[in-house]
Image (cartoon, rainbow, N blue to C red; front, side, top):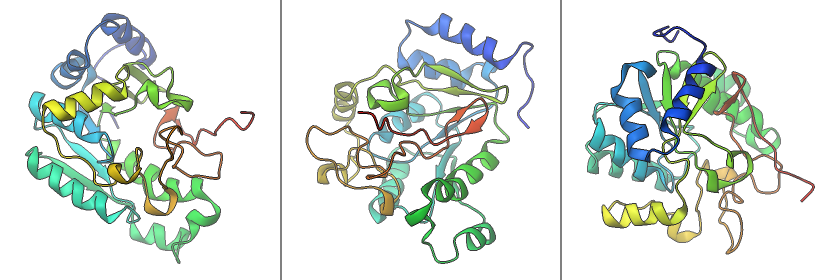
Length: 249
């Protein structure tokens, strides 16, 4: 279980952190999260997706010893696995941890690897939510790359969020836009995910990710044809949820 380092509910601490850092930069938020004791032990969770290299680079500069958790669902694009190795080597990540679901659990729930075809929520839960929750049990907080411009459930994302009274979630790039990310990658000469050039601005598991047409929402290619917009690793009131698309649009 996460350590109880400070008095007061997590929600109150999060409100205070957001008030304190409301006008600060992503770097200041990240430095605070990684170097100050008031958040406890923190890990970065990264998909090594289209924009992940920005946050990975920032962490590698500020605190390269930070644990980086990478969820390998065993259904990722080969390009993602190759990119993960490339970025880890280029940034000298020294505590990279690959997280996978327990094989007996997968064999029971999805013996023929077709669960994603008829129950994407269950597939994500087995391959992403459960292994991540197990990995995060030793941490007091975690860093994500969620940003407001990504839309849907992310439009009101703050720098700090409470996972009920369990952990604090940190979103240093919450206020960054696509142009900020592109500028950062160019200025720091960071490697790009090879699928971005092929029309994949948001990249998940291969069976559930498709290319995006010009003018579409960046996450339109995730679970295309369904109402699903999130895999469930992000929490509301301490529970993993799969936020649905607005079907009234």
